[in-house]
Length: 328
Image (cartoon, rainbow, N blue to C red; front, top):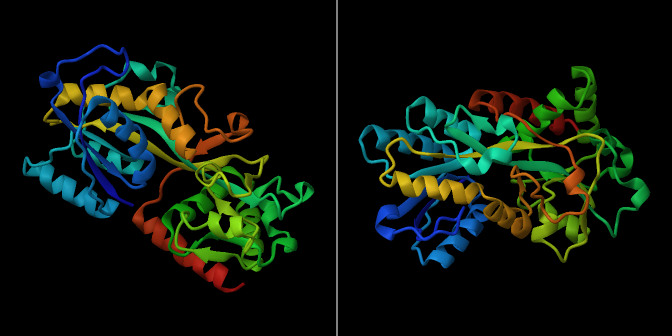
C-alpha cells in the first residue's frame, strides 16, 4: 500500500480537447493510496502531453488516513483529488473531506459505480486463477475455484499468505459470500486447498514469477500479469465462477486548492482514454464502458466487486486461515 502525490499542470480539457488557460487550472495535486504503478500511466501521459511537473511519495494506507485527517483538521491537507480503495475514500467522506462532483464522463458507467455524487468507482483489482500454459494441459485447467482442491495440484500452487495478506483474506471471504453455496462447502474448499500445500508469498506481486518459471504451475493471482509479463507463458482460467476484487475510486476533495483543475483531472482520469491506458498498458480491469484489458476472453468474464474487510475482521480471519493452512 502506498501514497502518491502528483502535481500536474493541465492546459487542455481532456474531454473536449479545448485549450484551457493555465492560470485557471494551476497545479493539481492528486493523492492515491496503494498500487501506484497503474495509476502513474495515465497521470504520466497527461504530464508529458501538458508539460506538467510531478512528484511521488509513498506511505502505508493506514498512515495515510490518519495523516490526511490530521492535516485536514489543521487546514493543511493540500490534495485536490484522492484516489484509492473504496473504504479509504468512504472514511474521508465521513470526515467531510470530499466534495460533491459527478463527472459527465461517467454517463455510461454502471449505476452502482456512482456513490452519492461524491465518490466514483473506476476499477476492480481482480483476482482469479492464472497458470503456466506450457505446463498445464488444456484439459486440466480449472473450471471452478473448487478444482484447486484436486490432489493433482499438490505442491504446485502459489498464492499470497492467507494468514496476513489482507487482500487475499478478503478474497477468500468473497468466495464464501459469492461462490460457495454454504459455509460447510466453503470450509471444505479451504481444507482441500490447504491439503495441497500451496507456496505462500508476501503479496500478489510475487505470485506470477514462480508460475512463469515453472517452479509452480498455477496460483491465485491477478490476470493483469498476463499483460505486464507478456513474454511469460501465462494464461487465466475461464471459470464458471466470477473473478473478484476490491473496488477503487476517485473523488475531489472538499477544500481543494484548485477545484476547477481537480474536476478537469477527474474527467480525464475517468475518460476512455485514461482508462484505456490502464487496461492496455498494465492489464487493469476498469469500469469505463467497452474498455477491457488486452487479455483473450476478458471482455466476456464476470468480474464482481467484494468488500474490503475491517482491521478487526482481517485479524480474525487471518488467524483462522493461519490455523487451517498450518494444519496441512
